[in-house]
Length: 282
Image (cartoon, rainbow, N blue to C red; front, side):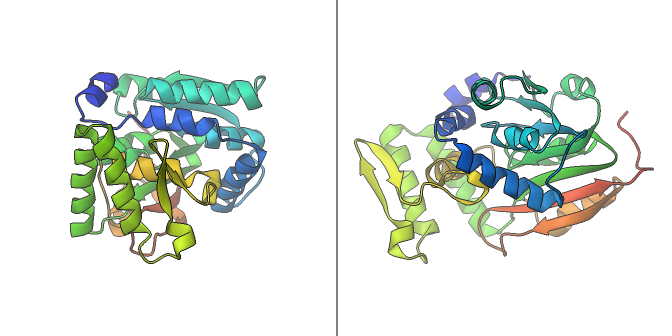
């Protein structure tokens, strides 16, 4: 497996973990409550007692923590060592005695995936499209779901030419220096929020850092860190909902929840249930 740190150094991958490690400093009970609400809304329950939960590409670890708060036995892994460190820091701060295992690993690493077993809920929000091999990553994640279990994923919406434009922006961001990156983030914010009220869209540079109003957003996340993740997030792949539906149906999954970005920028969110007779991973 290619060393992710070398990819970041070469400008071929965004430093996802560094961004989420900074975000962890903002996590508080209010953000955790928002994350629990988001998870419960999609899964249709607030109680995961006795159920196993796998967080594929755990990032900051916020949703692993949310699953723990809902009663699940949690396992988290991430390709980026800084994301692993961020998740460990979050666990140590909010749930030091939790039934929650954290490790390094890639969803594309067949040996890693084969050693995980199967889980009642497999969660991978905004991750699989950053692996560089979206469909193989989705295949591997689906194989980790137990019979009658749930797969909760989100995948960037395919916007045609606009998605190709964003791919170029992301590629440029990762090949650029600090000043060019700040300018790309500010320009992207102006484009993304161009139809929003000024109070929502306002961005500025203070002390060389980009700040945005409304520091909290849906799912307990941060406008600033999500924006940086969006502009820098590379590798970058997209898919139409019908492509995702067809792919999962062929593997014995049925759609249980869908939340789209209404054809715009961002992720389409899916929860699929695996049928009891779906073929298992080899």
